[in-house]
Image (cartoon, rainbow over the protein chains, first blue to last red):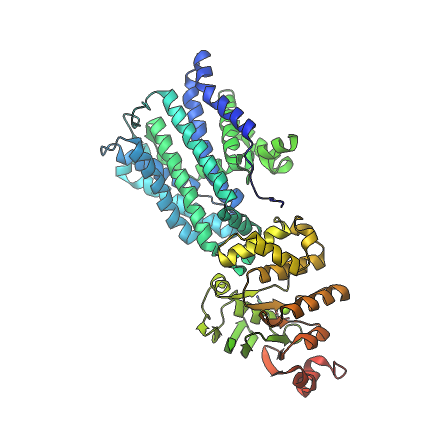
Length: 314
Length: 237
Ligand SMILES: Nc1ncnc2c1ncn2[C@@H]1O[C@H](COP(=O)(O)OP(=O)(O)O)[C@@H](O)[C@H]1O
Ligand SMILES: [Mg+2]
């Protein structure tokens, strides 16, 4: 039987990409550019966050314009817990994940009662409320943000070593992608496709669409929260701008660039945007304009993003 | 045994009373047709019974249980499914995947064998692996019907399943519905009077949202008000 929605595992390309990513710190060291390991780690974390947004936009048809809020929830959770004496990443990162999930539950429970433009606006409104809340709260550092002394500890491995942190982030991203593929191939994934295709009919054949969407919204919020926790652990600092609406916009641009509704769309978009930014930001202050032009080109000529282009070649 | 019992159903849109004090009784295994001119409120009635719309007043009892305020998906789980006058399928799913989705929605289980059985019932076996979006009109109408069937619901509300079909396709649907009779309880909204009078055990006539007559096909055929308002003096005898 034909199975149009099944996402196959392509073992050789997957192994190839994983191998390249695994060897990347070695290459950076050989080239004498250890700075790139931290940069690459940041890309991996944004790949995780953009992937979680792709689950909402690309697969669930939920165009959330407030995803940065969940990233912020995770990041500030870690930034609050560490000074309070929690040092283990085994506690901090799950806490970040739960914070993202919890906040997404609240936002989703209200926003998912609406559709279309209203949904976009209400998720944006929630996120901006969170942004102004953080800005105004002294305990959260107001507009200075919070600074951490050390990175969290992760059992025997030392996250203060950039290479170790890189591998930890890589492991999290790969686990998230594998989990997302499993979810999409499961009955829940088919239901999500169905909701994107024809939500009213889904209800008419017995699906509790609101509950299903809320579940997926919470899963995406959890992954974004974890991403926020990883980011603050990596950088040792967090500021309110992480929650600002422009950040939500950047995440959306990543998803569109990489390919909404493609398993690797979010990850590819994060890589593309951050690498382009890194490459041209030192040459011109007009790099956002360049990104804008690229985005326009993608929307006009490659509506399925980078992953769509790559598939057409294949 | 009474499968569906409706009393005092009202629904208005602005100033329009689309459904005005409608009552209905469907016995188990009965095929009950609802006829009436365009704008009579037939589709609105189906929306109310299925839960797509909430009534302004009235009670809907399914199998002895008041479902008036229940969400659409809960009613499906209780055994009431509907089809749409305007085809509403999943264009990016294959035909078989469409039906499997309906099985999954109504039962919670992914049961391809059951989906395949319904595929045969609506005569789309040859199109199993084609995308629903690529089907011809008649095939899409049969898939529309197949989605409702695949829920396994004992009570089906079918909103003009023959809409826009040629005589051959219509004959196919009539055969299909004849085969379904007695196995499921069916409320059939339909404009094709030959089909209605061949299939129906009872007929309710709606005009301007009101029931003007309800009875056996013979009673409806002879009903003077129905003839005047809908069938016309030279309607089926
Ligand atoms: N969503 C709506 N908003 C406003 N008026 C509606 C709506 N749906 C139906 N109506 C009106 O209600 C009446 C009944 O419509 P409908 O139930 O579609 O009739 P039928 O299916 O018998 O042709 C019509 O006058 C129609 O214009
Ligand atoms: Mg109608």
